[in-house]
Amino acid sequence: MKKILLTVTILLCITCAGCLEGESNLIITDDGEVYMRNRLTGVPLIAEHVESFRKSYENNPNAEISPVAENNMSGYEIRVHYPSIETFAAESNELYTTHDKCKGIQRRKSWFFDAYNFDLMMTGDKKFSPSEAAAVQSMLSQVSFNLVIELPYAADKHNADKFDAENKILTWQLAPVIIGSTADKHMRAQFKIWHRDKIALTIFVGVLLIAATIFFHVKARAEESESVAKDLNFKRNVFAGIFIALMFIAAYLLFANVNFTDADIISVRS
Image (tube, rainbow, N blue to C red; front, side, top):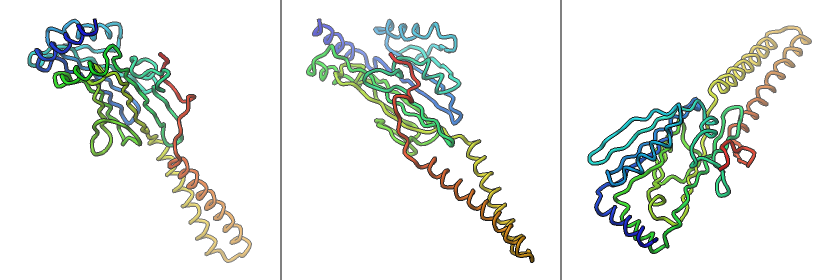
């Protein structure tokens, strides 16, 4: 049966120029919103599989399903909006879930940012032997399927197959896993969503502390009474000390390594 299936797969790829094209595009905004755009098109011979893709989203009230056609292929583009990464992690499809071989989606909250770790895996097709899988993969020029994650800020770490110069657009090629690979494919990316309001608040407080330090320093220099000047210098030192402490705490929060644990997992378990 495996040999028959292998033969059918190879014949399909030989007879169908560009028999299948797809992309799962995940756009994450700087506010943490998620826009998912999945697109799948294929030739008439595999129309049944393309329809199955559409049906998998029929019961999602937030999904916008649009038919698309390109050259000799037709299919669907499906768009879903999630108000946050947390909502996406709780409601997204199997690729983003947690199981024994990957963590799924993790979040570590901090004052200046929320750090996220995407640890995803697509399981290889185990029905082929290595030699059969190699034969199928020789036909991969007819199949294209990518996972693309677009980030608002540069990724801290990733293992993407392709990425732009700013490390914001990460692309993994999944066609080898979908068609014939016996190996699993791991997709990993770590990134931050910065809290601009909290960063601005911290800067504002720092400016106030510096202004208070300068104010009491100038007042102390101009004061003729030694006791009053001493009191003003004490206040200057207090504000200066608070400012220095604030800077040390801010530096630690900004530059300390982010270590994710199982307690940080926010995706569902498959």
